[in-house]
Length: 79
Length: 488
Image 1: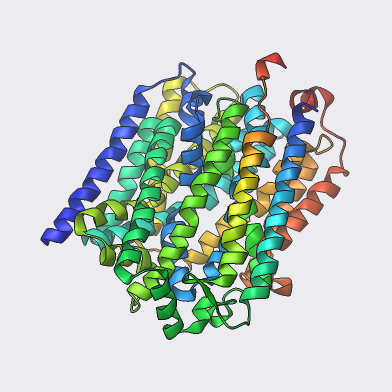
Image 2: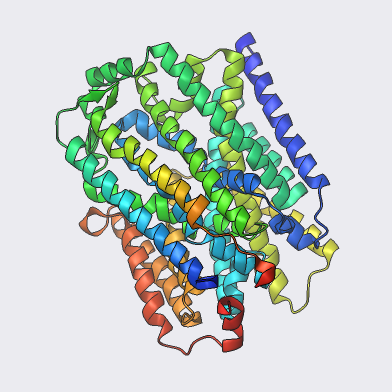
Protein backbone atom coordinates (compact mmCIF):
# COMPACT_ATOMS: atom_id res chain seq x y z
CA UNK A 1 0.00 0.00 0.00
CA UNK A 2 1.44 3.39 -0.99
CA UNK A 3 0.49 7.07 -1.20
CA UNK A 4 -2.62 8.53 0.32
CA UNK A 5 -4.15 5.17 1.32
CA UNK A 6 -1.07 4.41 3.35
CA UNK A 7 -1.29 7.88 4.96
CA UNK A 8 -4.94 7.22 5.80
CA UNK A 9 -4.11 3.91 7.45
CA UNK A 10 -1.40 5.59 9.52
CA UNK A 11 -3.96 8.21 10.65
CA UNK A 12 -6.47 5.51 11.63
CA UNK A 13 -3.81 3.68 13.67
CA UNK A 14 -3.03 6.99 15.42
CA UNK A 15 -6.73 7.29 16.27
CA UNK A 16 -6.80 3.75 17.70
CA UNK A 17 -3.76 4.47 19.87
CA UNK A 18 -5.54 7.58 21.20
CA UNK A 19 -8.63 5.49 21.98
CA UNK A 20 -6.62 2.81 23.82
CA UNK A 21 -4.81 5.46 25.91
CA UNK A 22 -8.12 7.12 26.74
CA UNK A 23 -9.70 3.87 27.89
CA UNK A 24 -6.75 2.85 30.09
CA UNK A 25 -6.26 6.20 31.81
CA UNK A 26 -9.97 6.92 32.40
CA UNK A 27 -10.99 3.42 33.55
CA UNK A 28 -8.02 2.81 35.86
CA UNK A 29 -7.96 6.34 37.29
CA UNK A 30 -11.70 6.30 37.94
CA UNK A 31 -11.59 2.86 39.50
CA UNK A 32 -8.61 3.53 41.81
CA UNK A 33 -8.75 7.29 42.32
CA UNK A 34 -12.37 8.50 42.51
CA UNK A 35 -14.27 8.40 45.78
CA UNK A 36 -11.80 6.00 47.40
CA UNK A 37 -9.42 6.66 50.32
CA UNK A 38 -6.00 7.84 49.02
CA UNK A 39 -2.95 5.58 49.16
CA UNK A 40 0.61 6.38 48.17
CA UNK A 41 3.45 4.77 46.22
CA UNK A 42 6.64 6.69 47.02
CA UNK A 43 4.76 9.90 47.75
CA UNK A 44 2.63 9.72 44.59
CA UNK A 45 -1.05 8.68 44.85
CA UNK A 46 -1.31 5.06 43.66
CA UNK A 47 -4.07 5.89 41.15
CA UNK A 48 -1.70 8.40 39.49
CA UNK A 49 1.00 5.72 39.25
CA UNK A 50 -1.27 3.06 37.64
CA UNK A 51 -3.67 5.39 35.83
CA UNK A 52 -1.25 7.99 34.45
CA UNK A 53 2.49 7.35 34.88
CA UNK A 54 2.55 3.65 33.90
CA UNK A 55 0.35 4.11 30.79
CA UNK A 56 2.45 7.17 29.88
CA UNK A 57 5.54 4.93 29.78
CA UNK A 58 3.69 2.15 27.94
CA UNK A 59 2.32 4.55 25.34
CA UNK A 60 5.72 6.14 24.96
CA UNK A 61 6.93 2.71 23.86
CA UNK A 62 3.95 2.54 21.47
CA UNK A 63 4.84 6.04 20.28
CA UNK A 64 8.42 4.91 19.56
CA UNK A 65 7.10 1.98 17.51
CA UNK A 66 4.68 4.22 15.65
CA UNK A 67 7.11 7.02 14.81
CA UNK A 68 10.28 5.02 14.23
CA UNK A 69 8.86 1.84 12.70
CA UNK A 70 5.26 2.18 11.56
CA UNK A 71 5.34 5.62 9.86
CA UNK A 72 7.05 5.02 6.54
CA UNK A 73 9.54 7.24 4.71
CA UNK A 74 8.69 8.01 1.11
CA UNK A 75 10.90 8.76 -1.82
CA UNK A 76 8.76 11.56 -3.23
CA UNK A 77 10.88 12.17 -6.32
CA UNK A 78 10.44 8.57 -7.35
CA UNK A 79 6.64 8.72 -7.27
CA UNK B 1 16.46 47.07 42.55
CA UNK B 2 17.85 44.62 45.15
CA UNK B 3 21.01 42.58 44.52
CA UNK B 4 18.89 39.44 44.14
CA UNK B 5 16.53 40.98 41.61
CA UNK B 6 19.54 42.50 39.78
CA UNK B 7 21.02 39.00 39.39
CA UNK B 8 17.66 37.67 38.23
CA UNK B 9 17.32 40.57 35.78
CA UNK B 10 20.80 40.01 34.34
CA UNK B 11 20.12 36.31 33.79
CA UNK B 12 16.85 37.24 32.14
CA UNK B 13 18.56 39.83 29.90
CA UNK B 14 21.02 37.13 28.83
CA UNK B 15 18.08 34.95 27.76
CA UNK B 16 16.56 37.80 25.68
CA UNK B 17 19.95 38.50 24.08
CA UNK B 18 20.29 34.84 23.11
CA UNK B 19 16.80 34.91 21.57
CA UNK B 20 17.75 37.84 19.33
CA UNK B 21 21.03 36.15 18.46
CA UNK B 22 19.15 33.08 17.15
CA UNK B 23 16.74 35.30 15.19
CA UNK B 24 19.71 37.11 13.61
CA UNK B 25 21.46 33.81 12.83
CA UNK B 26 18.31 32.40 11.21
CA UNK B 27 17.85 35.50 9.09
CA UNK B 28 21.36 35.15 7.64
CA UNK B 29 20.37 31.82 6.10
CA UNK B 30 18.28 32.20 2.99
CA UNK B 31 16.99 29.23 1.05
CA UNK B 32 17.04 30.71 -2.45
CA UNK B 33 13.25 30.29 -2.69
CA UNK B 34 11.09 33.39 -3.23
CA UNK B 35 10.32 35.75 -0.32
CA UNK B 36 6.87 34.27 0.44
CA UNK B 37 8.07 30.67 0.56
CA UNK B 38 11.13 31.68 2.54
CA UNK B 39 9.24 33.88 5.01
CA UNK B 40 6.18 31.70 5.66
CA UNK B 41 7.55 28.14 5.42
CA UNK B 42 11.33 28.67 5.69
CA UNK B 43 11.90 27.53 2.11
CA UNK B 44 10.50 24.08 3.13
CA UNK B 45 13.94 23.20 4.48
CA UNK B 46 13.10 22.66 8.14
CA UNK B 47 14.78 19.58 9.63
CA UNK B 48 13.48 17.18 12.30
CA UNK B 49 15.00 18.80 15.41
CA UNK B 50 13.89 22.35 14.61
CA UNK B 51 10.50 21.07 13.41
CA UNK B 52 9.94 19.13 16.64
CA UNK B 53 11.03 21.97 18.89
CA UNK B 54 9.10 24.70 17.08
CA UNK B 55 5.98 22.51 17.02
CA UNK B 56 6.11 21.85 20.74
CA UNK B 57 7.10 25.44 21.60
CA UNK B 58 4.07 26.67 19.65
CA UNK B 59 1.78 24.15 21.36
CA UNK B 60 3.13 24.90 24.84
CA UNK B 61 1.97 28.39 25.75
CA UNK B 62 1.62 30.54 28.83
CA UNK B 63 -1.26 28.25 29.73
CA UNK B 64 1.10 25.28 29.99
CA UNK B 65 3.50 27.02 32.35
CA UNK B 66 1.23 29.42 34.22
CA UNK B 67 -2.43 28.35 33.86
CA UNK B 68 -2.11 24.56 34.20
CA UNK B 69 0.33 24.61 37.18
CA UNK B 70 -2.03 27.14 38.76
CA UNK B 71 -4.81 24.52 38.46
CA UNK B 72 -2.47 21.84 39.86
CA UNK B 73 -1.73 24.17 42.78
CA UNK B 74 -5.46 24.64 43.42
CA UNK B 75 -6.85 21.16 42.66
CA UNK B 76 -3.89 18.82 43.32
CA UNK B 77 -3.01 15.50 41.70
CA UNK B 78 -6.19 15.26 39.59
CA UNK B 79 -4.43 17.56 37.12
CA UNK B 80 -2.26 14.61 36.08
CA UNK B 81 -5.40 12.93 34.71
CA UNK B 82 -6.54 16.25 33.25
CA UNK B 83 -3.41 16.52 31.05
CA UNK B 84 -2.84 12.79 30.48
CA UNK B 85 -3.99 12.99 26.84
CA UNK B 86 -0.57 14.48 26.14
CA UNK B 87 0.85 10.94 26.31
CA UNK B 88 -0.48 10.45 22.74
CA UNK B 89 -0.29 14.10 21.67
CA UNK B 90 2.59 13.50 19.25
CA UNK B 91 0.94 10.43 17.71
CA UNK B 92 -2.37 12.20 17.09
CA UNK B 93 -0.94 15.66 16.34
CA UNK B 94 1.65 14.45 13.85
CA UNK B 95 0.38 11.01 12.81
CA UNK B 96 -3.14 12.05 11.84
CA UNK B 97 -2.24 14.94 9.56
CA UNK B 98 1.46 15.84 9.65
CA UNK B 99 2.87 13.53 7.01
CA UNK B 100 -0.09 13.98 4.69
CA UNK B 101 -0.18 17.79 4.97
CA UNK B 102 3.58 18.07 4.39
CA UNK B 103 3.30 15.84 1.33
CA UNK B 104 0.42 17.87 -0.15
CA UNK B 105 2.20 21.16 0.61
CA UNK B 106 5.27 20.07 -1.34
CA UNK B 107 3.13 18.79 -4.22
CA UNK B 108 0.85 21.84 -4.53
CA UNK B 109 3.08 24.66 -3.28
CA UNK B 110 0.58 25.64 -0.53
CA UNK B 111 2.14 28.14 1.90
CA UNK B 112 -0.66 28.48 4.45
CA UNK B 113 -3.55 26.44 5.81
CA UNK B 114 -6.21 28.50 3.93
CA UNK B 115 -4.09 28.05 0.76
CA UNK B 116 -4.34 24.31 1.21
CA UNK B 117 -8.11 24.25 1.69
CA UNK B 118 -8.81 26.83 -1.02
CA UNK B 119 -6.87 24.86 -3.66
CA UNK B 120 -8.29 21.49 -2.65
CA UNK B 121 -11.86 22.73 -3.12
CA UNK B 122 -11.18 25.49 -5.70
CA UNK B 123 -13.09 27.85 -3.46
CA UNK B 124 -12.17 31.46 -2.78
CA UNK B 125 -14.88 31.53 -0.05
CA UNK B 126 -13.18 28.73 1.91
CA UNK B 127 -9.80 30.51 1.69
CA UNK B 128 -11.27 33.81 2.89
CA UNK B 129 -13.42 32.25 5.65
CA UNK B 130 -10.42 30.30 7.00
CA UNK B 131 -8.24 33.42 6.86
CA UNK B 132 -10.77 35.57 8.72
CA UNK B 133 -11.34 32.89 11.40
CA UNK B 134 -7.58 32.56 11.91
CA UNK B 135 -7.03 36.31 12.29
CA UNK B 136 -9.99 36.77 14.64
CA UNK B 137 -9.32 33.82 16.94
CA UNK B 138 -5.53 34.09 17.02
CA UNK B 139 -5.66 37.81 17.84
CA UNK B 140 -7.40 36.88 21.10
CA UNK B 141 -4.80 34.24 21.72
CA UNK B 142 -2.04 36.82 21.27
CA UNK B 143 -3.83 39.18 23.68
CA UNK B 144 -3.88 36.47 26.35
CA UNK B 145 -0.20 35.64 25.83
CA UNK B 146 0.80 39.33 25.98
CA UNK B 147 -1.04 39.63 29.29
CA UNK B 148 0.75 36.52 30.61
CA UNK B 149 4.15 37.85 29.47
CA UNK B 150 3.56 41.25 31.10
CA UNK B 151 2.41 39.61 34.35
CA UNK B 152 5.62 37.59 34.44
CA UNK B 153 7.76 40.71 33.92
CA UNK B 154 5.75 42.41 36.67
CA UNK B 155 6.37 39.58 39.12
CA UNK B 156 9.98 38.82 38.24
CA UNK B 157 11.49 42.24 37.55
CA UNK B 158 8.97 44.68 39.04
CA UNK B 159 8.31 46.13 35.57
CA UNK B 160 4.96 48.03 35.66
CA UNK B 161 2.25 46.12 33.75
CA UNK B 162 1.71 48.66 30.96
CA UNK B 163 5.45 49.12 30.32
CA UNK B 164 5.89 45.33 30.32
CA UNK B 165 3.13 44.60 27.85
CA UNK B 166 4.40 47.27 25.39
CA UNK B 167 8.00 46.01 25.66
CA UNK B 168 6.95 42.40 25.25
CA UNK B 169 4.78 43.06 22.17
CA UNK B 170 7.54 45.16 20.56
CA UNK B 171 10.25 42.53 21.13
CA UNK B 172 8.25 39.62 19.67
CA UNK B 173 6.86 41.61 16.71
CA UNK B 174 10.39 42.79 15.92
CA UNK B 175 12.00 39.37 15.57
CA UNK B 176 8.93 37.85 13.88
CA UNK B 177 8.81 40.58 11.22
CA UNK B 178 12.61 40.54 10.90
CA UNK B 179 13.13 36.85 10.23
CA UNK B 180 9.81 35.19 9.41
CA UNK B 181 9.28 31.45 9.83
CA UNK B 182 12.95 30.56 10.08
CA UNK B 183 13.62 33.09 12.85
CA UNK B 184 10.45 32.01 14.67
CA UNK B 185 11.38 28.33 14.31
CA UNK B 186 14.98 28.81 15.46
CA UNK B 187 14.05 31.00 18.42
CA UNK B 188 11.26 28.51 19.23
CA UNK B 189 13.83 25.71 19.22
CA UNK B 190 16.09 27.64 21.60
CA UNK B 191 13.10 28.52 23.79
CA UNK B 192 11.94 24.89 23.88
CA UNK B 193 15.35 23.85 25.25
CA UNK B 194 15.15 26.64 27.87
CA UNK B 195 11.62 25.48 28.81
CA UNK B 196 12.61 21.85 29.30
CA UNK B 197 15.78 22.41 31.32
CA UNK B 198 14.16 25.26 33.26
CA UNK B 199 11.27 23.14 34.44
CA UNK B 200 13.33 20.01 35.21
CA UNK B 201 15.84 22.01 37.25
CA UNK B 202 13.08 23.94 39.01
CA UNK B 203 11.36 20.68 40.00
CA UNK B 204 14.61 19.20 41.26
CA UNK B 205 15.36 22.28 43.40
CA UNK B 206 11.78 22.41 44.72
CA UNK B 207 11.86 18.74 45.76
CA UNK B 208 15.26 19.22 47.40
CA UNK B 209 13.88 22.17 49.36
CA UNK B 210 10.76 20.43 50.65
CA UNK B 211 12.31 17.02 51.32
CA UNK B 212 10.95 14.78 48.55
CA UNK B 213 7.59 13.46 47.34
CA UNK B 214 6.66 11.81 50.66
CA UNK B 215 6.81 15.23 52.34
CA UNK B 216 4.64 16.72 49.58
CA UNK B 217 2.08 13.92 50.02
CA UNK B 218 1.92 14.40 53.79
CA UNK B 219 1.52 18.18 53.46
CA UNK B 220 -1.28 17.89 50.88
CA UNK B 221 -3.07 15.29 53.00
CA UNK B 222 -2.88 17.69 55.94
CA UNK B 223 -4.20 20.64 53.88
CA UNK B 224 -7.05 18.81 52.10
CA UNK B 225 -7.26 15.05 51.28
CA UNK B 226 -9.32 15.92 48.17
CA UNK B 227 -6.06 17.21 46.64
CA UNK B 228 -4.92 13.57 46.43
CA UNK B 229 -7.96 11.98 44.74
CA UNK B 230 -10.51 12.46 41.97
CA UNK B 231 -12.55 14.43 41.10
CA UNK B 232 -10.50 16.94 43.16
CA UNK B 233 -11.72 19.84 45.29
CA UNK B 234 -15.00 21.49 44.17
CA UNK B 235 -15.80 18.54 41.85
CA UNK B 236 -13.09 19.82 39.47
CA UNK B 237 -12.93 16.83 37.12
CA UNK B 238 -16.01 14.56 37.05
CA UNK B 239 -15.76 11.58 34.69
CA UNK B 240 -17.47 13.25 31.65
CA UNK B 241 -15.04 16.17 31.94
CA UNK B 242 -12.10 13.73 32.19
CA UNK B 243 -13.31 12.03 28.98
CA UNK B 244 -13.75 15.44 27.31
CA UNK B 245 -10.16 16.42 28.07
CA UNK B 246 -8.90 13.22 26.45
CA UNK B 247 -10.45 14.61 23.25
CA UNK B 248 -9.56 18.25 23.84
CA UNK B 249 -5.83 17.87 24.41
CA UNK B 250 -5.09 15.03 22.03
CA UNK B 251 -7.29 16.10 19.11
CA UNK B 252 -7.37 19.88 19.31
CA UNK B 253 -3.73 20.08 18.18
CA UNK B 254 -4.61 18.33 14.93
CA UNK B 255 -7.06 21.05 13.99
CA UNK B 256 -4.97 24.11 14.87
CA UNK B 257 -3.92 26.03 11.72
CA UNK B 258 -0.75 27.26 13.48
CA UNK B 259 0.37 23.64 13.98
CA UNK B 260 -0.91 22.33 10.64
CA UNK B 261 1.04 25.05 8.83
CA UNK B 262 4.25 23.84 10.54
CA UNK B 263 4.09 20.66 8.43
CA UNK B 264 4.08 22.72 5.24
CA UNK B 265 7.64 23.72 6.16
CA UNK B 266 8.94 20.13 6.46
CA UNK B 267 11.72 19.03 4.16
CA UNK B 268 10.35 15.49 3.56
CA UNK B 269 8.41 12.61 5.18
CA UNK B 270 11.52 11.42 7.01
CA UNK B 271 11.61 14.79 8.78
CA UNK B 272 7.98 14.41 9.91
CA UNK B 273 8.60 10.89 11.20
CA UNK B 274 11.69 11.84 13.19
CA UNK B 275 10.02 15.02 14.48
CA UNK B 276 7.10 12.89 15.69
CA UNK B 277 9.48 10.76 17.78
CA UNK B 278 11.28 13.80 19.23
CA UNK B 279 8.00 15.53 20.16
CA UNK B 280 6.80 12.46 22.11
CA UNK B 281 10.11 12.21 23.99
CA UNK B 282 10.05 15.93 24.82
CA UNK B 283 6.46 15.75 26.08
CA UNK B 284 7.28 12.75 28.28
CA UNK B 285 9.95 14.82 30.03
CA UNK B 286 8.13 18.16 30.16
CA UNK B 287 4.40 17.83 30.86
CA UNK B 288 4.34 15.56 33.93
CA UNK B 289 7.15 17.69 35.40
CA UNK B 290 5.19 20.94 34.89
CA UNK B 291 2.13 19.50 36.64
CA UNK B 292 4.12 17.97 39.49
CA UNK B 293 5.81 21.37 39.96
CA UNK B 294 2.35 22.89 40.51
CA UNK B 295 1.52 20.18 43.09
CA UNK B 296 4.88 20.63 44.85
CA UNK B 297 4.27 24.40 44.84
CA UNK B 298 1.09 23.85 46.86
CA UNK B 299 3.18 22.23 49.58
CA UNK B 300 6.14 24.62 49.34
CA UNK B 301 4.36 28.00 49.10
CA UNK B 302 0.83 27.19 50.32
CA UNK B 303 -0.50 30.68 50.96
CA UNK B 304 -0.41 32.36 47.56
CA UNK B 305 -3.20 34.87 47.03
CA UNK B 306 -3.11 34.41 43.26
CA UNK B 307 -2.70 30.80 42.13
CA UNK B 308 -1.40 32.01 38.72
CA UNK B 309 1.82 32.86 40.57
CA UNK B 310 2.38 29.18 41.46
CA UNK B 311 5.18 28.51 38.94
CA UNK B 312 7.23 31.70 39.42
CA UNK B 313 6.67 31.73 43.20
CA UNK B 314 7.82 28.09 43.51
CA UNK B 315 10.92 28.82 41.43
CA UNK B 316 11.75 31.96 43.44
CA UNK B 317 11.25 30.09 46.72
CA UNK B 318 13.39 27.09 45.77
CA UNK B 319 16.34 28.38 43.74
CA UNK B 320 19.22 30.88 44.11
CA UNK B 321 18.44 34.30 42.47
CA UNK B 322 20.80 34.05 39.48
CA UNK B 323 19.52 30.60 38.60
CA UNK B 324 15.95 31.74 39.21
CA UNK B 325 16.39 34.28 36.41
CA UNK B 326 17.37 31.52 34.01
CA UNK B 327 14.59 29.18 35.19
CA UNK B 328 11.95 31.92 35.05
CA UNK B 329 12.89 32.37 31.41
CA UNK B 330 11.14 29.00 30.84
CA UNK B 331 7.54 30.22 31.17
CA UNK B 332 8.52 33.46 29.44
CA UNK B 333 9.97 31.42 26.55
CA UNK B 334 6.70 29.48 26.28
CA UNK B 335 4.72 32.70 26.01
CA UNK B 336 7.13 34.30 23.52
CA UNK B 337 7.30 31.31 21.20
CA UNK B 338 3.51 31.03 21.06
CA UNK B 339 3.00 34.75 20.35
CA UNK B 340 5.57 34.74 17.53
CA UNK B 341 3.97 31.70 15.86
CA UNK B 342 0.45 33.12 16.07
CA UNK B 343 1.61 36.49 14.75
CA UNK B 344 3.26 34.74 11.81
CA UNK B 345 0.17 32.65 11.00
CA UNK B 346 -2.10 35.71 11.28
CA UNK B 347 0.21 37.87 9.15
CA UNK B 348 0.33 35.15 6.50
CA UNK B 349 -3.49 35.05 6.51
CA UNK B 350 -3.62 38.83 5.87
CA UNK B 351 -0.90 38.99 3.21
CA UNK B 352 -1.39 35.72 1.42
CA UNK B 353 -4.99 34.59 1.95
CA UNK B 354 -6.98 37.81 2.19
CA UNK B 355 -4.92 40.09 -0.06
CA UNK B 356 -2.35 38.30 -2.21
CA UNK B 357 -4.54 35.55 -3.62
CA UNK B 358 -7.56 37.77 -4.26
CA UNK B 359 -5.93 40.65 -6.18
CA UNK B 360 -5.65 38.87 -9.53
CA UNK B 361 -1.83 38.92 -9.89
CA UNK B 362 1.17 37.75 -7.89
CA UNK B 363 2.60 40.04 -5.21
CA UNK B 364 6.03 41.44 -6.00
CA UNK B 365 8.84 40.60 -3.55
CA UNK B 366 9.33 44.15 -2.25
CA UNK B 367 5.58 44.68 -1.85
CA UNK B 368 5.15 41.31 -0.13
CA UNK B 369 7.98 42.07 2.29
CA UNK B 370 6.56 45.49 3.11
CA UNK B 371 3.03 44.18 3.60
CA UNK B 372 4.22 41.32 5.80
CA UNK B 373 6.16 43.67 8.09
CA UNK B 374 3.19 46.03 8.26
CA UNK B 375 0.75 43.16 9.03
CA UNK B 376 2.96 41.70 11.74
CA UNK B 377 3.31 45.04 13.52
CA UNK B 378 -0.34 45.94 12.84
CA UNK B 379 -1.61 42.70 14.39
CA UNK B 380 0.77 43.06 17.36
CA UNK B 381 -0.52 46.62 17.85
CA UNK B 382 -4.15 45.48 17.68
CA UNK B 383 -3.50 42.77 20.30
CA UNK B 384 -1.58 45.31 22.38
CA UNK B 385 -4.58 47.69 22.46
CA UNK B 386 -6.73 44.94 24.02
CA UNK B 387 -3.92 43.75 26.28
CA UNK B 388 -3.44 47.23 27.79
CA UNK B 389 -6.85 46.84 29.35
CA UNK B 390 -7.56 43.09 29.29
CA UNK B 391 -11.22 42.08 29.59
CA UNK B 392 -12.17 40.04 32.67
CA UNK B 393 -13.56 37.20 30.59
CA UNK B 394 -10.31 36.78 28.65
CA UNK B 395 -9.65 33.23 29.87
CA UNK B 396 -13.04 32.12 28.58
CA UNK B 397 -12.24 33.63 25.19
CA UNK B 398 -8.91 31.82 25.11
CA UNK B 399 -10.42 28.42 25.88
CA UNK B 400 -13.18 29.20 23.41
CA UNK B 401 -10.66 30.15 20.69
CA UNK B 402 -8.46 27.08 21.18
CA UNK B 403 -11.11 24.41 21.12
CA UNK B 404 -13.32 26.42 18.72
CA UNK B 405 -10.59 26.46 16.06
CA UNK B 406 -10.26 22.72 16.24
CA UNK B 407 -14.00 22.06 16.34
CA UNK B 408 -14.26 24.18 13.17
CA UNK B 409 -11.32 22.86 11.17
CA UNK B 410 -10.41 19.31 12.26
CA UNK B 411 -12.97 17.18 10.43
CA UNK B 412 -13.18 19.31 7.27
CA UNK B 413 -9.37 19.00 7.06
CA UNK B 414 -9.31 15.25 7.75
CA UNK B 415 -11.97 14.62 5.09
CA UNK B 416 -10.27 17.03 2.66
CA UNK B 417 -7.01 15.09 2.67
CA UNK B 418 -8.24 11.51 3.17
CA UNK B 419 -11.61 11.28 1.37
CA UNK B 420 -11.78 11.91 -2.39
CA UNK B 421 -15.60 12.33 -2.28
CA UNK B 422 -15.28 15.41 -0.05
CA UNK B 423 -16.20 18.68 -1.78
CA UNK B 424 -16.61 22.38 -1.03
CA UNK B 425 -20.18 22.01 0.29
CA UNK B 426 -19.06 19.29 2.71
CA UNK B 427 -16.16 21.50 3.81
CA UNK B 428 -18.30 24.60 4.36
CA UNK B 429 -21.01 22.55 6.12
CA UNK B 430 -18.41 20.95 8.43
CA UNK B 431 -16.84 24.30 9.29
CA UNK B 432 -20.20 26.00 9.84
CA UNK B 433 -21.63 23.04 11.81
CA UNK B 434 -18.58 22.82 14.07
CA UNK B 435 -18.28 26.56 14.66
CA UNK B 436 -21.97 27.42 15.14
CA UNK B 437 -22.75 24.44 17.38
CA UNK B 438 -19.71 25.31 19.47
CA UNK B 439 -20.72 28.97 19.85
CA UNK B 440 -24.31 28.01 20.71
CA UNK B 441 -23.28 25.51 23.39
CA UNK B 442 -20.72 27.87 24.84
CA UNK B 443 -23.24 30.72 25.00
CA UNK B 444 -25.81 28.49 26.69
CA UNK B 445 -23.76 26.30 29.03
CA UNK B 446 -20.13 27.51 28.94
CA UNK B 447 -17.81 24.52 29.41
CA UNK B 448 -20.34 21.84 30.43
CA UNK B 449 -22.80 20.84 27.74
CA UNK B 450 -25.12 17.80 27.39
CA UNK B 451 -24.25 14.97 29.76
CA UNK B 452 -21.59 17.21 31.40
CA UNK B 453 -19.32 16.84 28.36
CA UNK B 454 -17.36 19.79 27.01
CA UNK B 455 -18.98 21.54 23.97
CA UNK B 456 -15.88 20.56 21.95
CA UNK B 457 -16.85 16.87 22.04
CA UNK B 458 -20.35 17.46 20.61
CA UNK B 459 -19.14 20.04 18.09
CA UNK B 460 -16.54 17.63 16.73
CA UNK B 461 -19.25 15.02 16.18
CA UNK B 462 -21.61 17.59 14.60
CA UNK B 463 -18.82 18.87 12.34
CA UNK B 464 -18.00 15.29 11.24
CA UNK B 465 -21.67 14.58 10.45
CA UNK B 466 -22.14 17.90 8.58
CA UNK B 467 -18.94 17.31 6.56
CA UNK B 468 -19.98 13.78 5.62
CA UNK B 469 -23.62 14.38 4.72
CA UNK B 470 -22.92 17.83 3.24
CA UNK B 471 -20.54 16.24 0.73
CA UNK B 472 -23.46 14.30 -0.81
CA UNK B 473 -25.39 17.51 -1.52
CA UNK B 474 -23.06 18.44 -4.40
CA UNK B 475 -21.02 16.65 -7.07
CA UNK B 476 -17.46 15.53 -6.26
CA UNK B 477 -14.47 17.77 -6.98
CA UNK B 478 -13.20 17.67 -10.60
CA UNK B 479 -11.07 14.62 -11.47
CA UNK B 480 -8.04 16.63 -12.59
CA UNK B 481 -7.96 18.41 -9.21
CA UNK B 482 -8.40 15.14 -7.33
CA UNK B 483 -5.52 13.63 -9.30
CA UNK B 484 -3.15 16.11 -7.61
CA UNK B 485 -4.25 14.96 -4.13
CA UNK B 486 -5.17 11.31 -4.65
CA UNK B 487 -3.28 10.37 -7.78
CA UNK B 488 -0.60 8.32 -6.02
